[in-house]
Image (cartoon, each protein chain N blue to C red):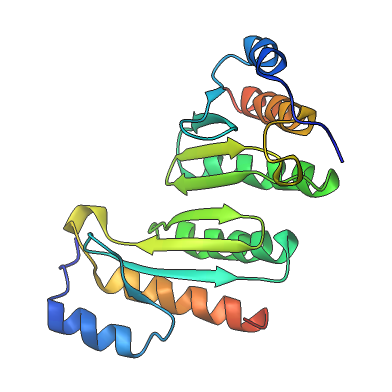
Amino acid sequence: MVNRLSADERKAALKELPGWSEAKGRDAIARVFTFKDFSEAFGFMARVALVAEKHDHHPEWRNVYKTVDVVLSTHDADGVTQKDIDLAKAMDAIAKQLGV
Amino acid sequence: MVNRLSADERKAALKELPGWSEAKGRDAIARVFTFKDFSEAFGFMARVALVAEKHDHHPEWRNVYKTVDVVLSTHDADGVTQKDIDLAKAMDAIAKQLGV
């Protein structure tokens, strides 16, 4: 069990995650990733899926062709935790390798 | 370019696709697939992604842990076409192999 970040902690963490923002109407963080095409978008998702499964912490995400719309929150904590920040960083790193 | 199915054609096609229904407020068809866990859900998505890429026709889909929420329509035709029916059938066949 991890603790929910306070509003200040969440704000500080988001400062280091350009592209991510507070999800509207929820205690969650969100980012839209846009790739070149479906193949790149799904390749990104496949790599993120391995990370998510390894850490047993999974994203909510929606894919339409070349875009991947991600929302992260921790169900058990009913809000954003360090687990979400870590997954956001891992997603950014994978996207960066794909030139995003 | 494929033609948009008429309301009657769409209705007839849906009769052969139990589990699928008309998407609310859109000319599209939808189904929610529920698997055992994330690994099975993402395994399903990976197999569907290969089919989608092969036929250059891609789903809109949202994954939250073990569920995959799918909406199919054909952008170029601004509605449901035979391509969507074919992709729906392929998804059902893959899900069936996974015991869904």
